[in-house]
Image (cartoon, rainbow over all chains, first blue to last red; front, side):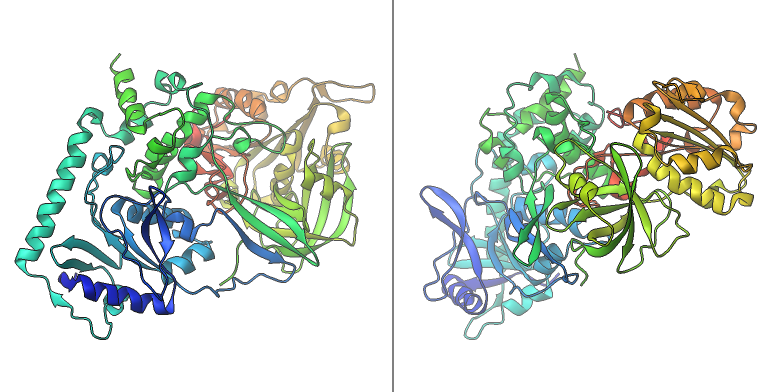
Length: 345
Length: 274
């Protein structure tokens, strides 16, 4: 790992302007009270909001689009790799981890999804430390921290006068090579300030999640809780609107459909959600997960049993979006906590 | 990079009426399909969509392959496939999934049980077994359908009755006056005496979930080892590549880790046959 460097705020603005000159750069900017991923204009690069927490939209939307034509036929059997790469500035650790989760779904073995692979290869990802957790944040419950730990090309942490930047890849190292910008090794004082900030935020996330801590890991609770009464308790309350799944940074279900487009035909991929009733309906009309509790449970099984067994990681990053999005105010942390309670009944 | 979502064109050589609900399409893809018994393909009509079908022909036929399509109420693609005519172009992707370990079956008695349209992948297994019949100790088939009309591969089944290499028994849930075989669900024609060397025999089954639920305890009672009981599983699938999420059971994707599973692989998943 290369040593962390320091770049002044004004130099970082120059770096952003250079990036924005030759490819789309997206960063979290607040609009109408919510922080969204907004494309920075090359002419007047807005200052990205690197503090706070993640944006509303999960990072997957850049790589795995809500709706996308994945093939046109007849004739198209090759993947047309014609998109420029993009830059994401200010991705928080929960979103960085989600890319690792989705690498498993789309690129771990053949056949790999060419859209995912190409966009991942081309993108420059700049992580950023969280500065103040929202009440819904729970990355620490999953053994993670509220600052970039992996899956970044660069990771920035705001300190007095500028940014401490960690370099995570060669691509990241090259991206710092901008004319007129001074990149110097970070001093111990600068690193100390960053680490102090990190400790404070981490403690805050841990503190607000004390009430949700369980004696056994979530993975064990879900794996041994298939018949738990917890699942049925949420039936009816869960509206099955799938908002939690749409906003989840690691959910990756989709469905393909074809449509005629003049002389040729298109195959389109759209996001799909396991909370929808028709999700498991087979050709013969049989529905595997026919009851509300089967469907409610499925999200937890997929994230805390299937993923660990298959890919050695949980498919939850503690971003808390599902808690915010739920119309019924169901808190995933509470459901997992209830699982443990129901066991000790 | 190859686009795995893009289909390959396949000429429809023949459309065979199996019964009022099922037609078998004989397809010749632009690029020959190299598959093994148990694997499935996505087949569809241009601009309509695609659906998963277990290949039902012999893996030794390299130029063409068959799929048997059961028409579904409100099923756009199965309706289009049923309306297709020889000479038209269909679309295929695949093959996908794992296969029956035919080498492991060699030297053993192979006990094949098919129910309803689940007979389709069983036909691929049986044709592969018969192609090298001297390699297997015995080939047993137990095939059940709802009624005589709804049976598939009727001519082939007739020829198997007199095939000295096979031991076949057929049944239907509800008979008509022409029916001269057993009446009752498929488990009524599965007997312990069907197999001479049970500890070394293998069972291969495909059928509706209800059939599998009743068949499993019977196979265990007959004495088949859980690791020698193979099933072709069906779940909703969209991509066939382990990405779209639909076909998960327990810690498997049916499309990629299956569709062929041994009983000991899936026994711990309570939702395998729901």
